[in-house]
Length: 242
Image (cartoon, rainbow, N blue to C red):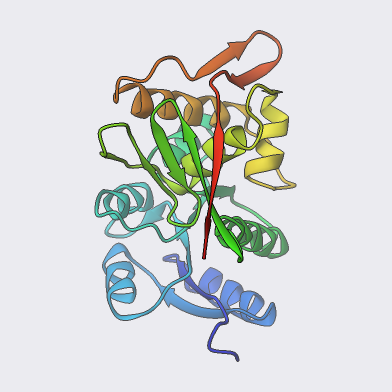
């Protein structure tokens, strides 16, 4: 395989599931590494270049949600798709709050998992502007850089955002003043064909408001009853020659 073939780390304590996913994902032109615990997850990350993690919530030495939170606390930005057998929306929302980029409930079709892997990797790739210029957004004293996937406030402080949070923010920055419904936001930011969880958008909006408002910004997002959400501040796009 090409040296640029994405490498996927599958973390699940069930050997049959690991074997099945490894065989299917490799058949879709990816490289695959396997782990059965949180400890092995940390070892694989420390010794390999990982492009995306497929992470089961229930592991023998800890929770996949806790592992996700710990990675984000260490500013590790590897995309994460959570696998969960839990049925309650709140459990999935907690996963998103801890920094996961997507989730998939068990049982699932491996084909859907690969579709989500491709969608997450595509969003990460498309976030990097192409030559001949790089662009950055300026709004209410903030600068959002799609290439670095970073946000700086008016005082020069970095605002730590998860991958899903940055994707959502950029969706609004590309469409300032436009009212976007939850379904539109799910389509634009997550690109998935499976189960729709509208409340995940509400969680991400709440987190964006909290993090950006902490820097003293005026209200950036407006909730439109029966409509969705709207970015209500002026956005300027600056281009920098490469």
